[in-house]
Image 1 (cartoon, rainbow, N blue to C red):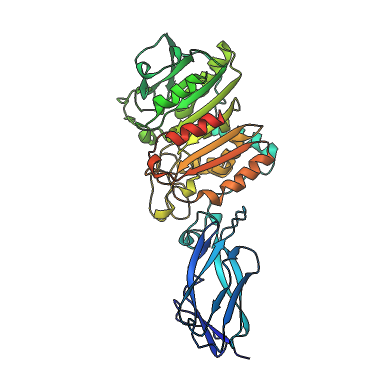
Image 2: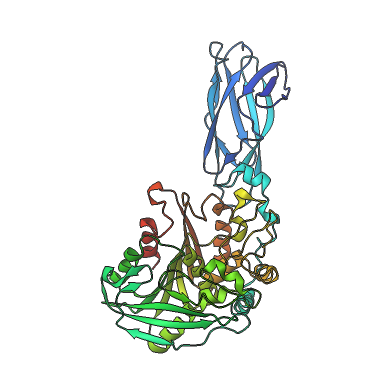
Length: 476
């Protein structure tokens, strides 16, 4: 019997099959196939066959499919032919897999069956990430919710931490209300809006442990022809596009709006920056409030108290919420905390902490205060922004994956909208590693979780874009 030598040309060694040789022009150990995509490579015979030779391939586990078999003749045996392997998207989150491929040759003196292996990765992942960054073993990655009953337990733990042990806010009375407000509305202006009848400005005041006063404004915008529902629109940390377009779109659909923003940004918040020992002039400087309190409360208290006010004074049938950037993070947090929000769309605002900076793993990364920071490659949350103990305890008891499940539990829904080319955050390719798994778990707890990753380069802005407006219109 004549045999085959499969020579992996990018390797220093070869696998000796027999006296006749075949060369496959790629290295299956370091060049993986990605689910849902294809890779082509060359195959050639290294020795003159006595007649035509047919090469066929088979996958034992079904992780890949192949192009048609190849036929070599005595005239073209040494010319490489293109052969394609396509990864099968199996919908299962299982990281790196190894496919066993059987090569069969027949005819022309080549009669042998031999095996080689190739790596197959989940859709959207890069092999270096999988091989060098084992997210499954990181400290803050897991799902602690194991039953529907755990959701209530985690929510109680979350409320205690976020509100510094004081319990869920019950205040329903703003410190002041301006009826018929005109002019600046956070990141837009009343003169730019259409389809509304009037605007009220609600004022909420919070005094932190250093006696600094935080004054938050919530703009209550009334649709000209209301549908009985209210959408909270949460701006982010900086000037972002499409605020006006989004609010006008929602007003045209009959939604009343509660327009809010992040602490220490734009016209929404006024802070006393002169208090000795604080100097809090921007939200990322709130680490000066540690360890007397964690600062999450400052980001969220006014939104929940506003819902209390709406409950006491209006008859809305539903509360929805959408936010971008830091407002996207707040969207997820508020839905996890407050079950009165029944639908949410978070735009480029939330990804599990351990995925925030994997490309620079091993270096200190100071993230937004409300999310904490990653201080080393092991995923340990550092002391920038929060006390180490406090934030560690919070993320150990309530992980980001838990928050997603909490945000859509009980028949509610949340949709995360991200962009692959976003220059700020929450882009890259980590989503498919966990999104389908969370979606399945959410369904088992009566919720709906979706994640969209847009790749249209014309919509690469960090703020709401045309694609996001479409998602919001479909969800609401």
